[in-house]
Length: 265
Image 1: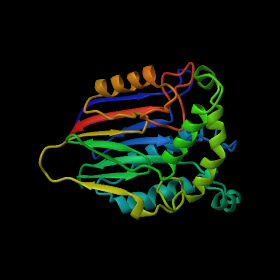
Image 2: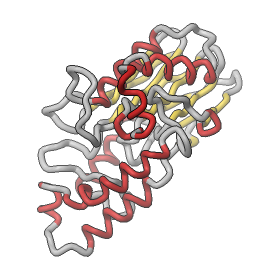
Image 3: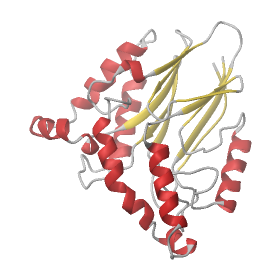
Image 4: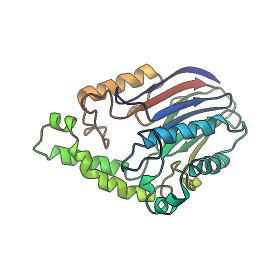
């Protein structure tokens, strides 16, 4: 494997990224920690998403080189589960929105497979693949309609996104289906039929793995960053052609943390 370029950028210059990249001799991975939507915290990290990302990165760094997707799903779930207190488990079964949660995309060198657990994306010789969460686009549409029909100015929403605040209860409700109708890494059993696996042959491939912080994934980092900058310039609220559940808030460089790695095999 030859790494061509990579980048991790936090959405806010005042906070550390909840995204992470792992590169070992046998695996390349992008991890997208989920932003906390409740007040529960599990460590000195202010962000559950960053804590989840760090734990998963540690696990991937120790995986045996012939680890299968099935073994990863079992092993990483067990690894995260150990970081919950026994007294918390019953509540976490009922409240998935309070779990440590992340999406992960991994390339296995030995198996020549890409595993997509949760909301992530990639390019394989220019062909785009993703594994989006159900309900996400519907919620983004709801938020867009709230903004478009509001008497508040767009500038006001960029300072305080009250439209996002209105859809948060719906987001929490959809998270009840976490690791039921869609897959994430959260310490509980991952439904492997919701994990997307891309198998490659032994011809040369150029691969881009990325988090969903890039709304338009391109074959180079420069192109992807240019598309992101154009989105910020033309539609900072993300309510037009590209719709999202959050905006380019005032003071931030993007609407989400972002990570990107391009490599050849």
